Length: 162
Length: 390
Image (tube, rainbow over all chains, first blue to last red; front, side):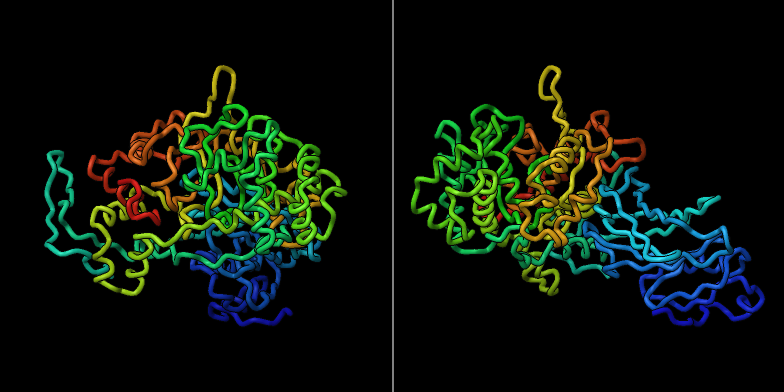
C-alpha cells in the first residue's frame, strides 16, 4: 500500500521546488549515504512528485530517484536477498523501462557470483532476485535506470561484517 | 570498549630490530569491538540443522541406515573393489589422508573431509553439484572414481532383498522396476541422508567464543594465549574472515588463492569455471526433475549462478572445522601441514592469481615466525579432537 509521507528535510525545500519528491523517513536500513544523496535530490528540478511507500528507502540524484527495499530487510553476507525498486514517475517519454542492479567490491576488484533476474511488477516497479554479497567488506551497489534515451546510475554503498 | 585482558601478566611491548612494535609472547590479548563481533560470528556451535527439502529421504532414519550401508558397499564400483569409504574413510574423518585420491585411477583432487555438509551450498572443490545427493551420485559414475553406471548399480542391487525392502519403504517404489537413473538418484539420496549425520563437535575455540560472549573471563583464560594471538591475526591482518566466516568458517563460495591449477603438460584444472558449466548442464541439478522441492528456495543458486572469467582456477573455500585432522590441504593436496598453509598465505605469489584486474584480496601476509606459529595454533583449536595437530 502506498501512503503519503512527510518530508525528512524542512518543508521549504519541497515548497520552493515543486518538482522534488515528498517522502518519509524510511526503514532503518536507510543509510546516511542515502540521506545525503537524497538531500541533493530535493533541490533538483528534474524529478516529479514521488510517494515513497512505508518500509522503502529512498535513493536519488539530480537526475533520478527511486524507492527500494531489501527482502530480507537486513542484508547478511553470503545470503540471497531480493530487491524491490520503484522508479519515481517521470514525464512522458522519460519513464524507466528497466532497472539493472549490480554490486561490486571495489577493494577486491570483483562483483557478485550470481546474475540477478529482474521482473517488472508494473509501470516503474521492479523485483530483482538472485542477489548475494558473498564476502564481508564494502560493497558498491549500482542501480542503473534504463530509459529510452538515457541510462542513469544511482549508487548505494553497504558495509557487511562477517 | 576493549575486551578485558585474557591472561595474566602485564602487557610487555618490545621493539624488534626492525623498529616495528611486537607484542611479547606473554602479553595479554585484547580484541577491539570489531574483532569481537567477527569472533562471535563464528558461532554458536553447533548451529541448527534443517532437513534438505530437495531430498525426500533427508532426515529419515530408515534412509540414514540404508545410506550408511551403501556408503561402504563395493557394489557401487565398476570392479567391485571400491566404495565411498575408499576415499572418505570414517577412521580418517571421512577423508583419505592422500594428496590426491585414488579411485579406479588417481584423481586430480584431494578428497574433502565429509562433515557438517548441510551447511554447504555447493559441493565438491569446484561446486559441480548443487545438492549433497547430486554430489553423492557423481563419484559412482565418474570413470576415475567408482566407474559404475546407473544400470550396473541397479542390476547388482536389485537382487538384494533387504536393500530392495528398505528402498521400497523409503521411496514407495520397487527398486528393480525403477528407471535406472531414478534408482541411482534415490540411492544417492540415501547416501546423502547418511552423510548429513556426519557432524563435528564443539572445540576449544567454541568454548572461548561462548565465554567471550558471556563475558566469562575465567572461561576465556582457558584458551591458549598462542591461539588467542592467532585468532587476532585471523580476524585482523590476515583478512581470513573475508571468506572463512560464520560458524562453519566458510562463505560456501570459491576463490583463487594462488594454488597452481596446472595438472600436467597441457592439462589445467579449471576449477569453478568448469564446475559451473557442469552443474548448469547436469540432469541431476536442482532445476531438474529429481528435485523433490522444485518450488523451494534451494534452486535459486543454480538459477542465478553465473560463469565468469575469474572463475578460472577458483576452488571452494573449505570449512576449517576439524582442519587439523584433515590434511593434506588445498584442492590438490599440495600442502602437507597447517604450517605449510600458513606459509603459503604469508608468502603467496600473486603472479599465480588468475583473477581480474583490481586490488586483490589475496596479498602476502609477511607473517613473522611467531605470528605464523600463532595462526597455526589457532587453526588447531578448531578441531573437536583436543590432541589434533600436536
